[in-house]
Amino acid sequence: MRLTVIGTGYLGLTHAVCMADLGHDVMGLDVDADKVARAGNGEVPFFEPSLEPLLRKNLDAGRLRFTTRFREVADFGDVHFLCVGTPQAAGGEADLCHLHAAADALAPRLRRPCLVIGKSTVPVGTARRLAARIRARAPAGDGADVAWNPEFLREGFAVEDSFSPDRLVFGVASQRSAEVLQQVYAKLLDDGVPALVMDLETAELVKVSANAFLATKISFINAMAEICEQVGADVVHLTDALARDNRIGKRFLAPGLGFGGGCLPKDLRAFRSTARQLGVESVVNLLGEVDAINLGRRSRVTELARDVVGGALAGRRLAVLGLAFKPGSDDVRDSPSLHVCRELVREGALVSVHDPVAMRNAARIQPDVRYASSVSEAAANADAVLHLTEWADYRVIDPTMLATVVAQRNMIDARCTLDESAWRAAGWSFRILGRREQRPGNPAPTSPAAPRELLRRM
Ligand SMILES: NC(=O)c1ccc[n+]([C@@H]2O[C@H](COP(=O)([O-])OP(=O)(O)OC[C@H]3O[C@@H](n4cnc5c(N)ncnc54)[C@H](O)[C@@H]3O)[C@@H](O)[C@H]2O)c1
Image (tube, rainbow, N blue to C red; front, side):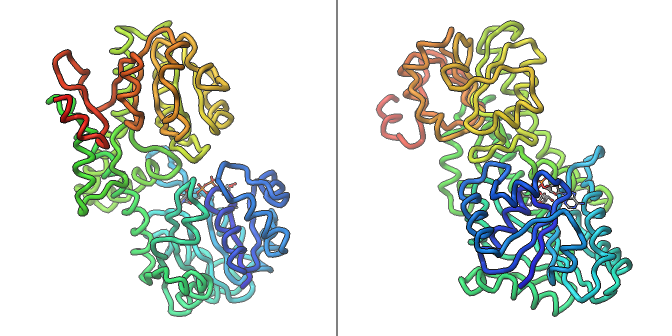
């Protein structure tokens, strides 16, 4: 099939490449000429393991090309995927200006029957309004149909998730659209991926409610962390015990600094804004608390840093490990770590940072910190080290080696993934969110993976 993908950012470029790899003839379009030129040269402008070789393979096979011209995509494709950004507007709602601009540029050029498939995350009701907007402008009129096929891929696993999604969601307004979607994804359907066909509104809601649920799960465990701190319990052990309950599961149940990135926070706020417009106060209140709990964890890290250095942060040297909003990505949009960095800098701390891949993106929006080329360089003479993004590289840091470069051995593990016993053994004070400071006489907490060790110490 001849497909086009409009908007070749994280989602769109991945989708274009994966559709080409499934055997379709694909044309990607972006208004950013630089992105188009780089993609056409086989270059992925963001960190996504395994995408670049696949891009090159499909360029070489002649199944993939890129353009900035809407006329070309309209002439080329029978199916047009909309993958443009839907950022957060000033009031928290989704800003649909890119979606409208793309639809308005495409529609007047649609001369033959086609299917426009939205993949961007949008407020419920958008697809139906967009369909009317496109039909009103398209020479093909009712022949230009609209469907919604929300995307659930995770940055860092984008290719894997595109080829093996848990499910495909087809939001349609006609049988014809459902059939076209089945043709587009025929290979995945043959591989056993379930396709759930539903109306447009339900499909839009599947995406935003999935993100709201995942955000709620993270904020739930972080609310429990606050309780743990109050009563002297240990959130790491609590989480481990909850996660082993099959009804609960361990995914998205990590206590710590909470969620960030280009999707969960803005999608949560946009959904809340929709609920407010609909007058559904229970959802407005629920999602407001989820957001507030999440942002509260960021301030809690700053409080902990003050606590650890024994007072004001002004003039204190702090090392921050990790800037990306999560490991496996160079995305720093609404990064919890960068948020903490800003708070630390505002309080006068001298902040030195390290990240394996996200430093270039971070430097564009956070110039007031020192970017170090290694963990040791970041930690040199530090009064405390803050572990804020849980890269696998940081789990293998040698605490004894790092102890030789810092001014004071203070570790704040805001992601609860470091080997606490190893850090303590090397003489570090070790703090996490969700556990009071250990006082003499209390059993030292251990990793949940070592219950025998805990029993031995008790
Ligand atoms: N990033 C993810 O992991 C992910 C996952 C699922 C869903 N989504 C959703 O997908 C959408 C895109 O997200 P993203 O992360 O890829 O954003 P992005 O900012 O990386 O990419 C958006 C792209 O759209 C382009 N664009 C803007 N206006 C355009 C126009 N009028 N015509 C053509 N191109 C235009 C931009 O230049 C940019 O390259 C959002 O709605 C997001 O919520 C993203």
